[in-house]
Amino acid sequence: MRFNLYNKYGYLKMWVFRSYIKKSCAKKGEKGEIQKVKYRDLGNTGLKVSEIGMGCEGFGENNCENAKLFFDVAEENGINYFDLYTSNPEIRASVGNALKGRREKFYIQSHICSVWQGGQYKRSRKIEEVTEGFEEMLSLLQTDYIDVGMIHYVDSLKDWDEIVNGPVLQYVRELKASGRIRHIGLSSHNPQVALAAVRSGVIQVLMFSVNPCYDLQPAGENVEELWKEDNYSSSLVNMDPERQELYEECQWRGVGITVMKAFGGGDLLDEKLSPAKKALTVCQCIHYALTRPAVATVLAGAHSVEQLKRSLAYEEASAEEKDYAAEFASFPKISWQGHCMYCSHCAPCPKAIDVAAVTKFLNLAKAQGQIPETVREHYEVLPHHAGECIRCGACESRCPFGVEIMENMTEARRIFGK
Image (cartoon, rainbow, N blue to C red; front, side, top):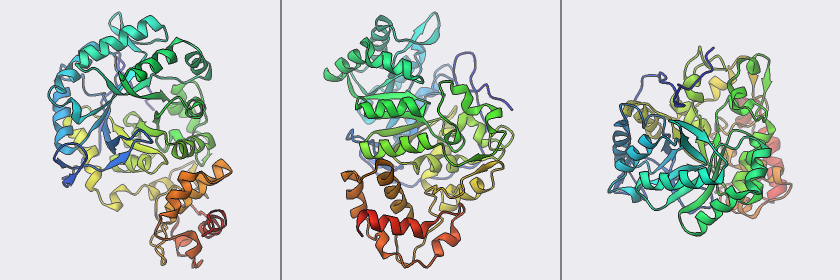
């Protein structure tokens, strides 16, 4: 199995998507005239972001000419959010040129502490390098502010502690106070670090790697472990509890999640490369990520306009095309038995209860040991509640993962009072 997903410049290698593309339907959105994507709240930031966003992997290809092509497609289809982790000055400049005349149509998520030295990318915590890199970023992007300033790539608690107690966080707060960044974010692959950052109250946005294979793996400081073949050689059961806790914590605290690595660098789309030993489709990967608590947008990696459009095709894909449950249930050596995946196979309920939503709010309340007010409010506005369950068992007969749904409805009624 191949695990080196990056070329010598630090960009994801090309992968092969399954060859399907569908026409998107028009929908009115927050920015622009005719929109073709749906929008979600980015936590408590007040930003309405397209649930399909853009990763920056392909911006630098074709001598950086891809950047303008990508932004043309994004504007046409209503994508209004993108990530720019790269510090490559040529790519940043190409994005700045692509944004000319339409800066206000896009929310920029760009990374503080990602710098360019000696012709290559470097992650830095040296404040002189960090400040110089940020100023260069603004200049090359031809803008005077960034919507979400990401504290870049924090995968160890020691690193996080040094950021919190050192000059980097102070500088980031100064940038926010001056309006040069509007919201503070953090990118991480480690749920322990991400939880610490979320609980600190410092960040409003979390960039995190979300897909059905990485979600099985325990916390660690080495991102390479997430796709190491040996870590999938024995039987794995259910989502790592710290990852589940992270998503739920973000949900009730109002921290929006922007998703990286939804396709696992493309490996999840190829049966020979996938750690699960079974290929998923682009739609299935996107849908899995979007059904996790607190997720606002999937930053779809693409190396061509055609690949970006394949991710956009999610918006008009059928429920069957998005459905990941059958594939998950058939993964060898991986089991989600007894764990609700929010796949909605339990529907339809004869009492019209949104079982997946009720279960999600139940899990959020149980995780906190209380009912956060926001969770109670969201539960209250559901048109039907757990107390209406007649215990017919139809939902359990359809669940691919053997979840005790009727008991969950009983517990939800006890906790929420209806």
